[in-house]
Image 1 (cartoon, rainbow, N blue to C red):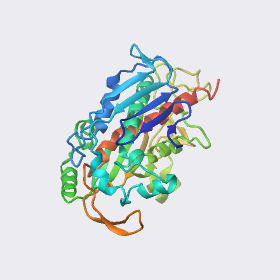
Image 2 (image 1 turned 90 degrees about the horizontal axis):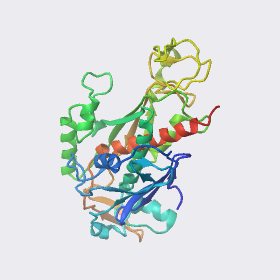
Image 3 (image 1 turned 120 degrees about the vertical axis):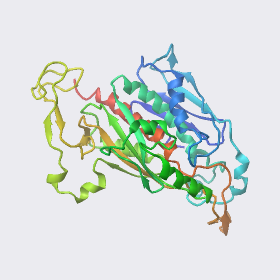
Image 4 (image 1 turned 180 degrees about the vertical axis):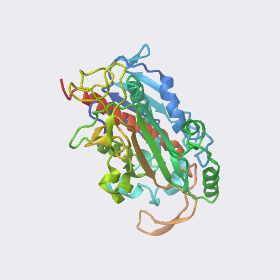
Length: 383
């Protein structure tokens, strides 16, 4: 089975099924000497795990306690493959016995069989959202590496169940609130939380939008022509099962703008700590990483979203990702069975009514993996 390895230099292999013994990952290419503790991984997994009591969240109570099997010694990465395992301890496989001969609406049941001729019907097997635990574990390692350069990746729920939350520029926007509340909304959660609970009570589900920001990213990351920064992030985020679209910066709104409205005006950057005026060419420094003769720049606006020509500008990378409503709903639906007969399907068991809160750390993880990979690739771009 192909398609389980992600990345070029900082590479991740994901493994495991929803109702198998465990899920996990192997990370190859992480440099030696990065400080890493198992609690760094557990912290991110706790934000993704089910059973955390958020509105409309699955009660499947997996503790998601990671074990580092290799690649770390004395709290530092060794430069060798890092293997992480997360054991599954709270499966209810019997919940799926009545569905094994049905093709659930909105799921990958039929397409999986159309490709392989066989599938694990227990929770969707490899196509389950449970697989994202491995991504979050790998993303925690990428975060630890990026922290050495001061790069941060932060995501939040900007829309859930049709309710918009405050965005950057709104006085009510509070990223700290998104980190503290279970809905991951950067403001008050009342309306959205109530709406999700109403849908869950009816056996229905909701979709929404996750926004993400990468800060302190240096200019120069991204590999033209086919390894553009946004192309790589788009590929990573769209590989999350429920994702249906990604837009960067002004996104689709830029299609309605004139060039004079859309262009971000370059301006001299603030004076750097090495004492050189920002607009005066000088030798490369550890702070900027710019080659000789290239001035330090910034931009008045950021409608480009942090990239020009597929290369980072040094401005924050900003994007939004749309996620479909959860496919596993308790309402009766029409479907087809393995004999090709029309029948009724009613999904029981433990499922999310809205996956948005749990997908926030997954979006962060996939973004961090891309930035870590491009950071390492960039080191070979010039002498």
